[in-house]
Amino acid sequence: MSSQLASQTALVTGAGRGIGQAVAAALAKAGSDLVLVARSAGELEETRRHVEAQGRRAWAIPADVAHLEAVRRAVAQGLNQFGKLDVLVNCAGRQPPIGPLWENDPDDWVRTIEVNLLGTFHCIQAVLPGMIARRQGKIINFSGGGATGPRPNFSAYAASKAAIVRLTETLAEEL
Image 1 (cartoon, rainbow, N blue to C red):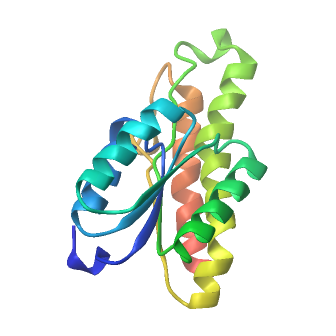
Image 2 (image 1 turned 135 degrees about the vertical axis):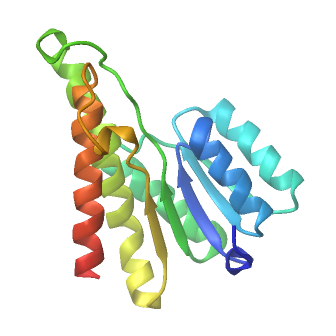
Image 3 (image 1 turned 180 degrees about the vertical axis):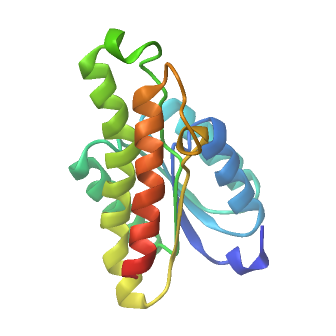
C-alpha cells in the first residue's frame, strides 16, 4: 500500500472477515482511517479493534449492502464521523447458491445478485456525489474469479462478478 493512503478515509464493505477484513487492515497500516461496513456487528467490532490497535480511527456500521437505504445511512454516518470519504473498496460478496443453475433456489440466486452487483452499485452511487464534488476519490471493486470465465455450479456468483467488471469499466468511462 502506498503512503498516498495516509490521512485518507476509506469505506470498506465486507469488512468483517476475509478479503474485506484484510483490506481494512492493510489500509490502516498504510495510514487510513476506516468506515467498516458488514452485516455482522460482532465481526465488525473485531476488525475495528484491530484497526484502532494500529493507531487509526475506525467506525463500524452494521449494514446489508443489498439494501439501498442501509447503504445511504452507512455512508452518511461515515461522512458525519470523518467529514469525507476518499476511497471506497467494495469487498462484500457471497457465492451461493452452489450447484447446477436448474437446481438453484431462485430467491437465493437473486440474493447473490443483490449483494454482489446491487450492493456494489448502491455503494458507488452513495459515495460518488461527494467524490465528484471534491474532484477526487478512488473506487475499487472486487470481481473475483467468476468474472474471468465460466464457473460451473456458481452461476449467480459468476454472472454478478462479470457484471461488476462491466459496471466498473462503464463508470470509468463516465468519470
